[in-house]
Amino acid sequence: MSTLLIKNARYIVSCDDSDALYERCNLFIRDNAIEFIGPELRQADQVIDAASMAVYPGLINTHHHLYQLFSRNLPEVQNMELFPWLVTLYDVWKGLDEEVVARSSLAGMGELLKNGCTTCFDHHYVFPAKAGDLIAAQFRAAQAVGMRFHASRGSMDLSQKDGGLPPDSVVQTIDAIMADSERLVRVWHDPERFSMRQVALAPCSPFSVSGDLMRESAVLARSLGVRLHTHVAETRDEEQFTVEKFGMRPLAYMQSLGWTGPDVWYAHGIHFNDGELRVLAETGTGVAHCPISNMKLSSGVCRVPDMLRLGVPVGLAVDGSASNDGSNLLEELRVAYLLHRLVHGRQAPTGYELLKVATRGSARLLGRTDIGCLAPGMAADLFLVRLDRLELAGAQLDPMSMLGTVGLKGPVDYTLVNGRAVVQNGELVTVDEREAAAQANETVRRYLNRF
Image (cartoon, rainbow, N blue to C red):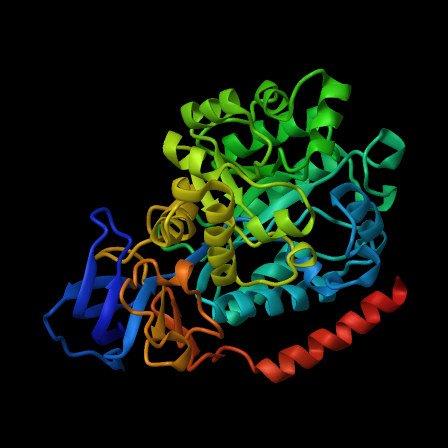
């Protein structure tokens, strides 16, 4: 049994039910959980002197495509919107293998951790034949860097010959997808409190997946007790596709397949009308907000203020590294704040409200009640930021909103996951960063040379 004391923290921003802000207080951790927050000083095996630091709950990333890290910043696709962007990049992604997925996942999760993100959900849906066990490679990478990780068994069964976007080499039959989905849940999914690994079922999108695959995935997920995720209402092209092919807008189509409810969350959710937002609120169906990706691909602006007002579950997300082009949820938080100030003015969420979207809201999307805030009994997932750094001079009047209004330039000082320090003084302590970067760049050269 190990103990850790975060001593005399200048601020502890709890994001708890009462929105408590602690000043000059201590946070005591036993093993992987928070035991106490308050003025009492307790003896511990390890001590972090936080007199000049602010402590925040770990951020939670609710939608990513980590494999895309090795196909970002490609000049050929920089001016494309979603559909042509996907068609072009599928020619790269069909060359994925276990090494590419393992090293891109490790690099992406390392960047997330360095920027205060302690839990990552990854939406992996590209499974070329004979590529290896890609999800196992991701879980190994998560264990190596110390990330709390939610993987998905994504899928596609509509190729270009069927009217979809992906090439034949990356789609699979429904039977193969269902069998592998069940295998991965049984091998990797841990539903217990403080679990470090979970699995969701996540067919890719309405334009790369058949209705039968959507229906069967929903039935299987619910029989196994896991959650459901997909892309919905990301672009006008998608809306036109579902209207022309199914005679329904995207949300109505998803409803017809059994894809609404508190165990379902969508990526993007940009193009919902007023009635559809009410459906999301009534059914408890969630949305992962991806502001930077939505801006880069010219997809539109998600109606986050309206969603929050109606009670739609909303979390924050990075989205794919090739449509971002990074893995920094702190940056996402500040961009979200600025984007909604620009579009919605006084109705925009505050910096603190967006911090809660990235913590409490994101935890809700993943079905977690043990992460997302700092309180006794919660997982010891948190990060610390020195307030005496030059970049934050004069910025400390509102520590609850600071990460949105001011932002953070550079990595956090400490990140703890499950009670374990994985970032110290702004650097990963779980892996050698230089070695990991060198291996990643060598893999990128091999991978893109095929393309």
